[in-house]
Structure formats: C-alpha cells, structure tokens
Image 1 (cartoon, rainbow over the protein chains, first blue to last red):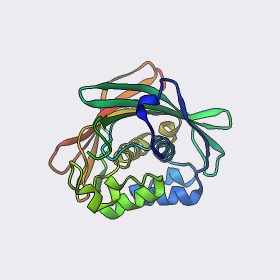
Image 2 (cartoon, each protein chain N blue to C red; image 1 turned 60 degrees about the horizontal axis):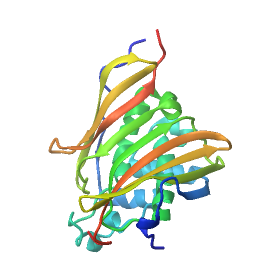
Image 3 (cartoon, each protein chain N blue to C red; image 1 turned 180 degrees about the horizontal axis):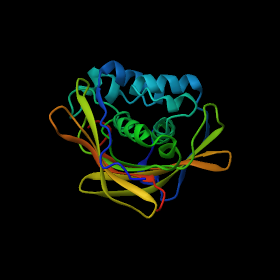
Length: 133
Length: 131
C-alpha cells in the first residue's frame, strides 16, 4: 500500500486494530534483544509492546525507504501479561514540510481492555523527493 | 530510600543475526535493516539496526534498576542520534539528573557505540515515592 502523505491530516486515525503478544513472541523478542531479565517471565517487556505497536503503525503508513526514525517517546502505564487482548490505535500528530523534508509525528496508544498500557509518539523524517534516499 | 546516582550499564554487541531476529520478532521488515543489497543503495551504504532494538537496551537497564515499577510507570523520551551498524558494540548509561522531585526520578540516558559516539540520548523518568 502506498500512502499519499499530503493527504494525512492532523488527528487522522491510521491504526485501530487488535494486538496479541504471545509468550512465543515474547521469547523471540527477548532472544533478539538479548534481555535475560527474569521479570519478563510473567510480563511482556514494555519495549516489546512498543515495538509491535510501532510496527503496526509503520505498516499502516508504508514509510518510504529513506525515512528516518529521529525520536521516540514512550510512556508505560501498566504491565502487560502475555496473550492479553490488546488494542492499538494511532493517529497523525504532525505532518509538515520544511527544508526539503517531511516531518511526520505519529502518536499511538495500546490498551488492555479499557486500561491504557502504553502511549507512544514517534518522529519520522522523510526526504521529500521520493522513496529512495 | 535513595535513587541511585548512576545505573548499571549494559553492553551488547549488535550483529546482523540479531537485527534479523529483531525484524522477525517485532514485525518491522524494513529492508534497510535486513537486506544488504537494498541497504547498499541508501545513504548508509549498509544495513542499520532498528532504533527500537537499541532503545531496548536502555529499557533493559531501567528494568534491571527498577523492576516492575519501570514497566508500569516508566517514561522515555529519546532522540536517535546516529545509525547503529551490525558489528557495533553498544553501551548504555544512566545518570540521575537531580531530585527525585515530583514523585519522579529523572535520568539522563544514552547509548554509545564502541567509539564513544552517542547513538541515542534522552531522558528516562521512573516513579519514585515522595519522602
């Protein structure tokens, strides 16, 4: 899917989908980041929740190859057990052009039932002249 | 209870196998991270580790220091300063900025590569009981 970034408007909802993080996914994530904390025997690492939510967000906007993830804010508000029925939503918080680049900020939220477990805000710089940087 | 002045650093060597594993685990399959032929035609010239992979090292440091408190009330605000290439060795740092105040301990956090270059800088906030 190709997104016309000019059409993205502030507040536009770009993701609203379920997200389930199984114990197997947690294991794979922990092996990948080489995190051996015993805390994660019962809880999903908070950055795993963020990573999977962010992947869903990035998938929704189909960022071009030259896009650069420049900044990230995360707020972890509640622990998440594996297999919790999460829901991820995301919207456009900034979409502006200056100096030959587009500055896109996407904010996302993950909830477990009605409890917010994570808030995030990703800043992305996209070269204005096309998909290849 | 006193907030620690510095946090125990974490050091990880970043490999392409790790980046590939992270792509699978996270679902972020941007070829910049995993496809050497593709990455050769980008400004970086080679594959780059996911920023969120490197950021996980800071979260690991915070988890080691604060346990479940981090997972249920921690905040991160960082900038990705430089790309991390497979073959790099990344070390985290965390230093208490001051306080704790307003029921939070605030840490300057960073990831540096093997040359001492900052690749991530920012702050982490963790809930801290008031006196």
